[in-house]
Amino acid sequence: MISLTQEEKIIAVIRRHLIWLVAKIFSFAVLLVSPIILYQFLSLAEKSLSFKVVYLNQLYFFIVSVFYFITWIYFFIDFLDYWLDVWVITNKKMVIIDQKGLFHRDISEIPIDKIQDIKTSTEGFLQTTINFGTVSVQTASEENSFKFDSVPDPEKVKDILLKIMHK
Amino acid sequence: MAWKNLIVLITLVLFAGWAFVSWMIRFHIKKYSVTERSIKIIYIIYLAGSALFFGFVLLNAFTLIISLK
Image (cartoon, rainbow over all chains, first blue to last red; front, side, top):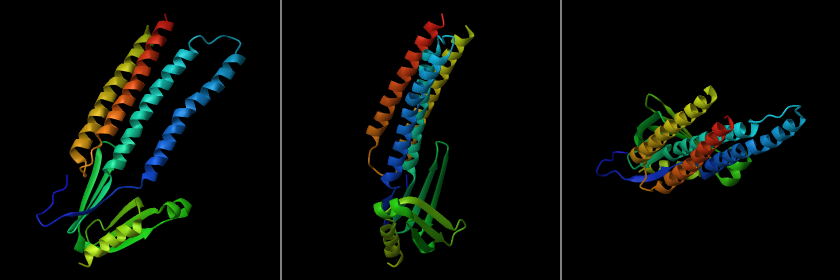
């Protein structure tokens, strides 16, 4: 959780665009379908064998169920990454939380007056049409550059930061 | 016999891994969620889905062990 001072209030909580999650769901769906397609090929291959592979079906189903199980869990670890990767903007500071898997977590707190430069970039057809992109913040602190990709409406994020900086 | 033991071992390792990862996900959600928005429903979907897939693993492991007799 984030500790706030008495006069501090949260202005915005920014997560990646939902399209990032949709892309993950799509790749997950492809992974789920692939064993079914592979099974069709294996069935064809089995027909051409001169001997009968008795345990092929049972073994294949066992391996596929293990594969599905691991893929499902892996997808939710990815979801956790999406959910816990946040930029919290308050009227005093910016908190950048970067979750990497289950065992790595980076948290940076940047006072608003330490921000020197804000850069946004939207690249490609999808980012331009759906309006998401990368926001980079340059600071005067030791680690001087922070980047957050797939941010929805990066221009708005920049505007919020500029508004707080110029108050 | 060795094959059967291997299948049982794989199933047990998967169960232990599932229990650990589920606990870790719950721990992260409870401790690190920044916003007040609850993601309990998503966690329940995760648990239900993983229980279903683990059920398939058990079923297939059982079928495979029987067919190896």
